[in-house]
Amino acid sequence: GYAAEMDNPAMASIIPAALQNKKSVLFGNMQEIYFFHKTIFLRELETYTDHPELVGRCFLERMGDLQIYEKYCHNKPRSESLWRQCSDCAFFQECQKKLEHKLGLDSYLLKPVQRITKYQLLLKELIKYSKGCEGVVELQAALSSLLGILKAVNDSMHLIAINGYEGNLGDLGRLLMQGSFSVWAEHKRGHVKMMELARFKPMQRHLFLHEKALLFCKRREENGEGYEKAPPYSFKQELSMSAIGITEHAKGDNKKFEIWLNSRDEVYTVQAASEEVKTTWVREIRKLLTGQLEAYREASQQKTSAHLTAEDNSTERPVDVNGEIEKQRTEEEGGNEPSSAGDKKPQERATRSFSSSDTRPKRQDIKSDPTPLGLLKSSVSLDTCMEHRGFFTSEDQVTVEPEEEQENKP
Image (cartoon, rainbow, N blue to C red; front, side):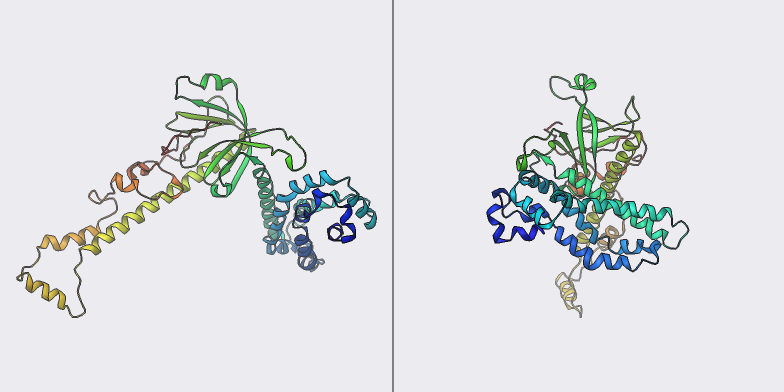
């Protein structure tokens, strides 16, 4: 095929410079996909020829292998760009003539993307005609998993198109959701309040929700050709999930919600395309904040427990197997027995509850805690944390103060 001809010395003279040593860019991991289907997946699918309603089991067993399509889709923009640069060259024309293909190479490069999409349509049809059959549960589970792969592919395709983000996107955790919104920004600090201007002029932003951060990007028109083609998103701002609060219902529109920080000194009113989209985003953000709060509580309790244990161990006197060290120390001290209060103190400290008044961690203790995902400001006391019990009500505003102000605005 085309890939083999790129290594053919007889064809080297008509391969354009832009295409030389670019086989992996043009074809991605198509060879890996081909090998998987020919040697593994096709054979397993054929075993269900007489019982197609059971084929969901095959998909479930190979769901991990099907993720190779995500790698191919990631490379597809680069492949398309290279093809556009060289599509009219003599090399591709000669290959198409030699292979007797009616369609150009670009049609075949699209096949893997079409295949992974058609699988979910196939499963939907099987479910439709397999109601009440033995394998319908597996078919439904396979469809759900496959739709998850398609969502991951779609989300990641948007993510790799971000331009201007200087950090490592991998450090932000898993990408959970992405979508386009209208955003109003309100900043109360400074000499001029922006809220009057922002109230009437929303910004169009594409939001990327990660486990540790929320990115605001601006979609832009694609300019340039080939590898110079500009990514469709420009990075604008990053909000750490450890610093934000959320209000589910913004006044005036059921499709709006608020994301805020710095005790509402900065408020971003976000309008979704529908109430369903808004509800989904609010639920996912609340889930992240809840997880961070629970992780913080657990870490604080573990640290306090370890601190108390260390104190108890430091007050114990060493005793050898025969008790000789203790006996010698008692004789040197003139046989004076320790006071009963001194004996009981270590034991009392170890048995008191975590919330006892004299063992409750001080503010400076918590300030030095390694906070998982940075949910709470380092100077917030544990008592303050425990007061977030109205967390799930739609009117409550779940937040914590950030350690430093956000300087960039969307």
